Structures are given as structure tokens and as C-alpha cells.
Image 1: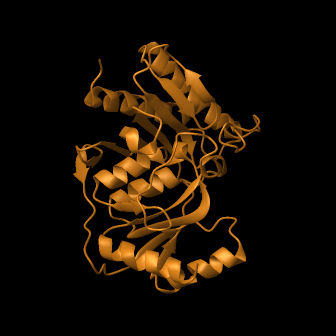
Image 2: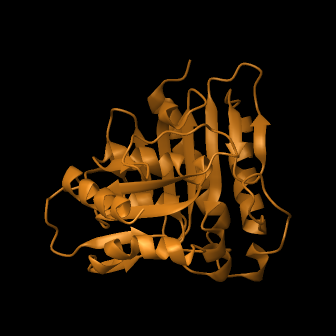
Length: 273
């Protein structure tokens, strides 16, 4: 039976193969097209199809006993006796990829059960430059082979907040206004898995998404990496975050570099809720 280290290596190899196969496609006409709606509900682009096929072909090649839960392809059973689930968003940030904005990634995770809390391994590769982030539960988080750890200092010199406000209502924008006004810098780059990896490196102090639109496929790997790097991640009420690995499950989250920041953000959210 494969151990966690082997599984991480498998996910890393699959990610590197995706990078090799799609890195030349960003911003080209070849990357786009409309291949219908994927299991996650978004329009599937050609770059999504190529990336997913790359992962599936590799898992079949090595005869890895698993069930794949893909953002586009949905549930694919590769074994009658699976060891667990490979959670795949082969291209997170498809709009960026098609437009040629250099911020998109491949997100792969492995879970032994049907809950987000059962994720044991996560890998995120930045498909614009090949930076590879990965984590195994209880063993820390890494970027390109070097361990990463969120500083967690109480008062960062520049307070940087990642905030996804795409498509939100005016009421939600009002609820977020205390966070916006208290931030030195607001960032939203369009690929939550890669943004969580950046958070794990300490490049962002807080990351907030209250839209209720996050899916497990584009969250699982980055979530584990951020936790293993020492980050705090909870739901919008400040409670421990968990989710079923189901396509109907969508949620919000708040991530912070330390408990003090987390408490402050939750207090601001609840004050106007």
C-alpha cells in the first residue's frame, strides 16, 4: 500500500506533467473554446481539457487505485478498490490562463475519506513559472523543496489582504467595508489555490472569501498547504472549516496569519452581519 510520501510524489509528478503540457498555451487562441459546463459549473476551456487528460493519463499509467473528483470531468473511478480520492482542479484560474494573465495553477489533493478534513496531501503548481508547493498532513509545507512557514507576527509592517469580491452584492460589499478600510493593500488574483499557496509563503496576511462559492476542488490542496504552513483557516462564523467532497457543497472562508488577526477579522465581519 502506498504511503503518504509516495502519494505526494505522485501528485507532484502529475502537476509537473501538466506544467509541461500547458505552459505554452497561456494567452493563445488554442487555450480557449467552449467545451460545455464542467462538473463544477464553470465553462470548460481547451486548456482545462488538456490539463485534466494529462493527470488522468498519468494516474492510469501508474495504475493508481483511486477515484478522481475533477473540477471539469466530475467523478472518475480508476479502481474498484480505491485507496482514496484524488481531488483535481487541473487549471485553477482558467480565465487568467486564457487571457494570458500569469496567475493560474494546477491543484491536486488526496483524501482518504469524503470530507475536506480527510485530505492528507496537497500539491499546487504555479503554471506560469513552475513553482511547486506541497504539503503532507503533519509534515509541514514546502515550496520548491524548501520548507515554508507563515511568520505569524502580530503587527505586519504592511497589512495585505486577499479579498475576493467578484460578483458580490452591494450588501456584502458593505459588510466587508470595515476590512477594506483597515487594510493597507487589497489583492485578488483569480486562482484561490495559488492564492492560498502565496498566503502559506507569508506574502498575504489575511485572505477572505465570503461569497459562498468556494468548491472543494479548487480549495483542498491550498487549504492543507496553508494549514501546514501555520495558517489559521475558519468559516465565516469563526468555526472550524470542513466540507463534504460533493459538487453541491460551496462555502466561505477566512484565513489569517495568526490568531489575533483572525479574531479581528471575524469581529469586523460579525459586527456588520
